[in-house]
Length: 211
Image (cartoon, rainbow, N blue to C red):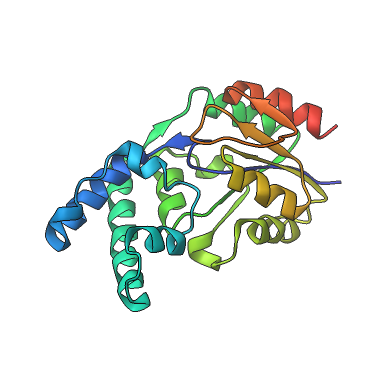
């Protein structure tokens, strides 16, 4: 029986909000200077949403083609910036993953744009620490479908999803797996199977949830 721990990215493994804001502002300075006022707090409110959902919030009522074009440029700007600067890794990430890898496969599933998760893996040299990953920007599937996709692709029979928002919790429920709330992140959860106040506590939560 294969078991896996599936992590969300933003608010769960790292905080890249300030650097995403810098990437966006550099892009918007040339395109829409009046909008070039993002900071980490504003970005954190968008974390967990798909690129399409973010575009709808940033450009309400705008033509779909225009929104798509703007989000493509912002997505590329954030990836370019993160490739050069990375983000803030949460404490004990490497030790936590090393401990979990003794008994579980490690996956990352995020609603991020294509290339964003790769920037995390490459800049911080974590690529060899996870077994597989998937993102909205590559499949255009909702998070619960990407969770099921990665489980099926790796023949996993039992898994738990670790995330920081109610959207993560809903995705885990839709995928039919338990949910651990990373309460140190950006959001809230309604009724998680376990609440972890740090990455170190995730290890204990996984062992309790995936007996």
